[in-house]
Figure: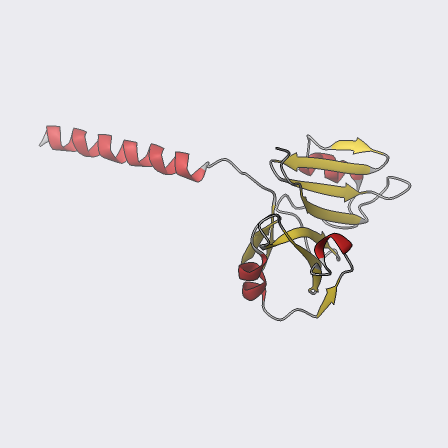
Length: 163
């Protein structure tokens, strides 16, 4: 009986370690969440747009390099910019937060102070009031305005890997 209890404890400990390791999976991109929909730049646009539902407006952007196929999908608190990648798949190029009702996963919103930016993103590189953090093929650019006194723009950007 004691041997069974020891084996059972060992199995539970192994499962707990496995679950913790699985839960601590390395983050590969900055993500933004609206309601139940989590999205990242660089991913396929259609599944995200389908989950988000009806947008307020869709604008087609003029882009000579892409034959005018880039679009902006305008939602209540954010905009999604799409483009075609080298494989001609439509991906999310940029996500721009447009109101203080939307926040990054790390809790940053429009209107907050540069100190809040550094708290949320301690590794942010600041240059002329622009704070940038990068993670693999994604980056967040936070603009604290000409006076570097409050967050006026937050955008997630896809960065193509250099081969």
